[in-house]
Image 1 (spheres, rainbow, N blue to C red):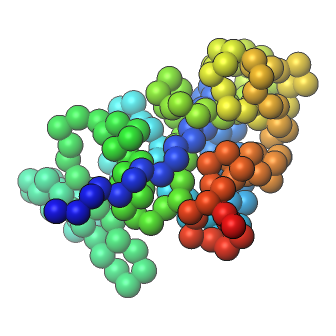
Image 2: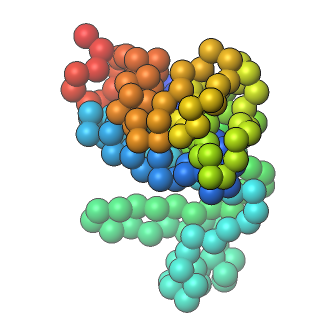
Length: 181
């Protein structure tokens, strides 16, 4: 039996609902992938969800009782599995490593993620989710926002946040060029 692959670093994008997390995450993913970083993502749902399209074959297979359904094409492969319990962040990081990712970025996990970047918009709230010392960084349009020693970036500063992530977590061992050495 071979050793399990080491898990990839995990960075969680957190914040209140409608704070701009997904919009910022899209910018961050584009920036990191443009640098050759292989990014895996997880969106945390607190409720059950269905990613299969009702009526499609894989959805019908699951409804008929399959515990795992897979869809394969020349360009994509997906697996939907029933689970006994929610996977932990370290377990998800191992899945990301198995897929060849350099980093796992989550959306959600307000309390679980060790490395959290909080996105906060003044139009939504002036209060932060993270307490002092809990955030890796703050991304906001609030000039007065602060959270301990965490650096504060603007809502459009995906390049600078990618620099922070790359220097903190991706200094070596990524698939892209220009990392390490």
